[in-house]
Length: 298
Image (tube, rainbow, N blue to C red; front, side):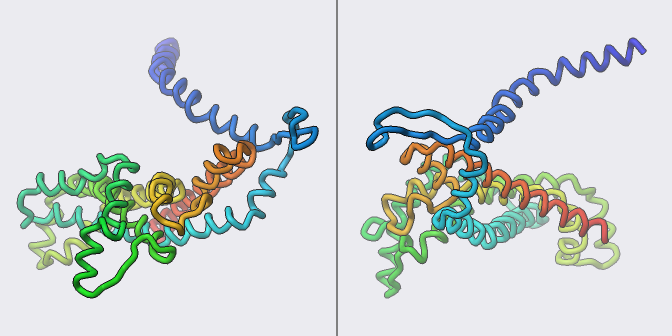
C-alpha cells in the first residue's frame, strides 16, 4: 500500500510542472476569455467622456457576434476554405509520404528536407514572400503568365482566398507528410513481402496495406488541419494591404483581432473567440467520432 502511494506521489511530482504550465497558459486564459465575454463596458456622459464601468452583459456579446453579418460571413468563408483546403492538404501530404516511402525513391533525405523546409518559415514571412509572388509588376509568375497571354490577378476578390490556401498548403504539407512518414516506417516490412509473394503489385500494397495502416496518422493530421484552418490569421493579415478583397473581418480570428485592437471592444472579441473555439471542438470531435465509428464498422 505504501509502495503504491509512493508511486502515485512520484507520478504527481513528475506531472506537476506540466499541469502548472497547462493551467497557467491554457486553462486560465480560456477561463478569462469566458469571463470577459460575459462583460460589457458602459460609458456615460456626452460622447462617452463621462467615465466608464464594466457590467455583466450575459449572452449579449454572443448574440451580437452571431447576428453580425460580417462575422457570420467570415465563418462561412473559413468553412468553405476548409472544405477545399483540408482534403487537398492531407491528400498532398499522403502522396508525398508514399513517394518517399516507395522502394524506388532516391535521395530520400534531401527530398524529405525540401518538403519539410517551408514549415520552418514563420507564417508571416511566408505570406510576405508569397505576397511578392502575387503582386502584378513584381511577381515573375504573373509576368510569365502574361507573356503567355494569360492574365491573372492572384489578389482579386475572387482569387485571394485560394491564394491564401496555396500559402497554407505550402507551409504545412511537409509537416503533415512527416507525421504520415513516421507511421509508414512503423509498418512491419514482412507484410509487404507476404503481399508480394501473393502476387500483389505496388498499387495493391499501397491501397490494401499502407493506406489502411496509416489511418491513425491521417486522422491526426486531419484534426490538426481542421483546427489550423479555423485559426487562419497571419496570412490574410499580411496580405490585407495588398488585396482589397480582404476586409477587417475576413476570417473569424481577424474579426476578433479587429474588434479587440481596432474597436477596443474586448468583450465582443472574447465572445467571438469563444465561439470559434467551440466550432473547432465541434468539428474536431465530430470528425473523430465519425472516423472512429467508421473504423468500428469495418
